Length: 131
Image (cartoon, rainbow, N blue to C red; front, side, top):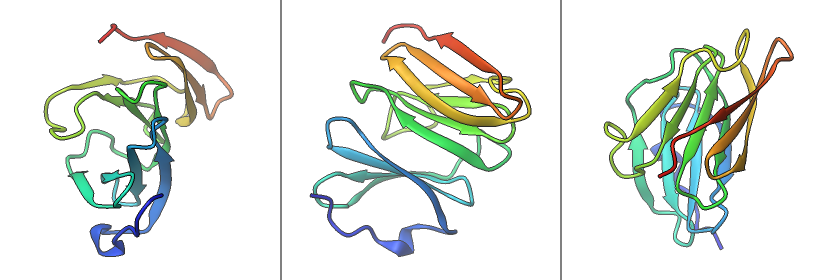
């Protein structure tokens, strides 16, 4: 069970929340584009990413199947993929023009493949380097 999340942690309204498949972590994104990682049992904040890798609203948020990657899609057409949930300044991959006119949705096919749906109705698949 997820404990109560502290609303004071968010600088703006929460847009998205996504559970890691193993239930050990949750990720949430607010209107300020901050990415919050919470402990899945206690609700305790594990990390808040306040660095801005995407320049417009984050429109999608998705964990891969094993919970080793977290992807964010943005209205700025980019996808950012994080692999270190304690130090956001390090392990990040960015796909700059992933979705035409902005990213509408993202979904992991498996741990290393990602489908991106663009606002322009484009559907693209990206293969990431195995971890």
